[in-house]
Image (cartoon, rainbow, N blue to C red; front, side, top):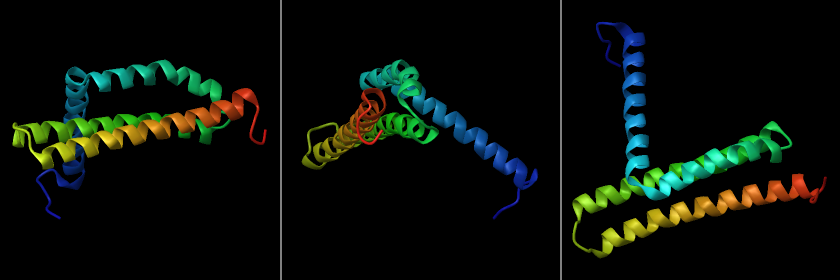
Length: 132
């Protein structure tokens, strides 16, 4: 590992600050240009209070919020893949289409996971079914 003039602590701090800045840029860019991401963020904001009501434990709350974050993560990756594919292959190409379709399928599966987790925990904790 290379040492810099400021030492390892300075290096780690600069990397953390730099990486955080790029990450925030990515979130802003996705929010600005991707309608699906805006809808998913809106759902996160609207459903978050409901998550505190549905969850019967900290673990369940983590599952609810984790499922929501996985959707956002998949959408960010899908958007990144679409942008790179569009840049590299502006014309229609089979492999480009396949890459975009597969990234879209990842978003769909993350949404399915979200619906299952929220549905099961809501059913279990609000309706009082499944072992309660």
